[in-house]
Image 1 (cartoon, rainbow, N blue to C red):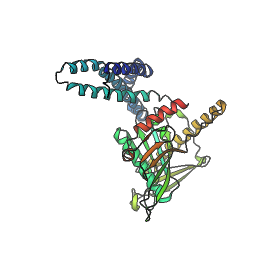
Image 2: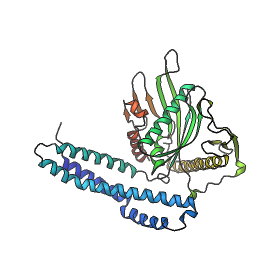
Image 3: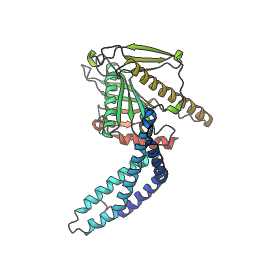
Image 4: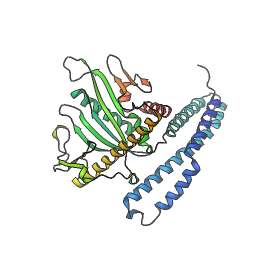
Length: 367
């Protein structure tokens, strides 16, 4: 293998970091941090808990962004010194450490560069993810639960906060559907590329003759609604049903009829919530989920009008977007980006960063 020219690699990542700093606008971030600190310091801030939460959350995100950029800048500036010190060591053992740090910095800068592509209107929002089993019966229900686990493990790996709002378990195995909220900077922009139909091919564990089965599950990702979004819902347009929460095997989550299902008559959108302790809380959470789904519907309708004006027919966002094959060979392939891997167990354990990064770059280049 040819020797790596670390000085050229350092120059390249330095140039990339400069462009990232320009896009993320470090001076503007510092200004925002000062303004938000002033707002957070107001004595009666918590008289309005919702607004206080918004301010402190925004401040935390801005400070985190500043710390990330400044730490990365220091690491890039320290690299030449690190290699200089390593070169002066007679046994050359320091070179391995220096290259390990270089590779680590390259990886972090690559991830940050992808984040700079997330500049859509709602990209910095939290995300609501709904997973539904589709064609395939018990197979599809089991597959939907596997996909749910994949995303929960992904969120766990990244320390994203997850709040499961509702899960409807299938009778034999797996789930019919689930909805959960992911709270993290740019959660919606990052995870929105996962929307679409996920297809699994495997030897069925539910088939006594061990035949190969194909099953499908759908993933929907919408941004969490904010106070400024103005999604008005007329009480006459909705039907509210109350029922008893249940867990796997009929295990009671709650012994009262506190779970709430809301049907929006005009659109047919149905949302449920069963994780709160009271019917009132569940209804409030379900209404917030409904608002988010209606907001996304409005955004899609606006985008469809723009696409029609542009003569854009590339509206194949949904439909099959990724194929997971476990038999007769092992491969996960994204049908939009052509990114693929043979390490299916890692993917199903939540290692989907490369798929998400490829999806974000693909979306940017195709729009």
